[in-house]
Image (cartoon, rainbow, N blue to C red):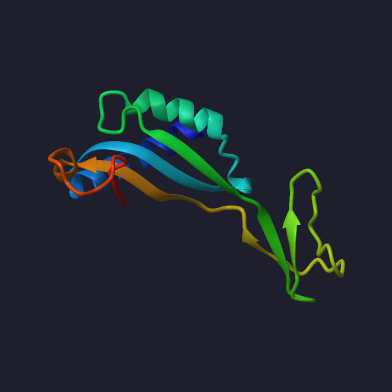
Length: 132
């Protein structure tokens, strides 16, 4: 259920950025989420659709790119994919427990597509609008 609060923050950032760029409509957003964030795209999309009503983001399509969790072994220097199911708290190559998490906790807005005022007035941009 933490997706609701997260998506409220995402919506605020998107709308603020769109307004700064004179956008009148947000059409597409790509979000990147590490596998350890426990962000469930289905729920995040549902909450986003619900809270975006009445804003310039209403109807915007969301895409998600999920980044797998990876650990780096400080002993042998190799990376191994980490999954909660495997509970792999040691290097998959040499067995060392001297590991560092290198990915899987990230969450950010990769990009946003929007239609700006000049796009509506016959600008040379294509129909998808401006990419931010």
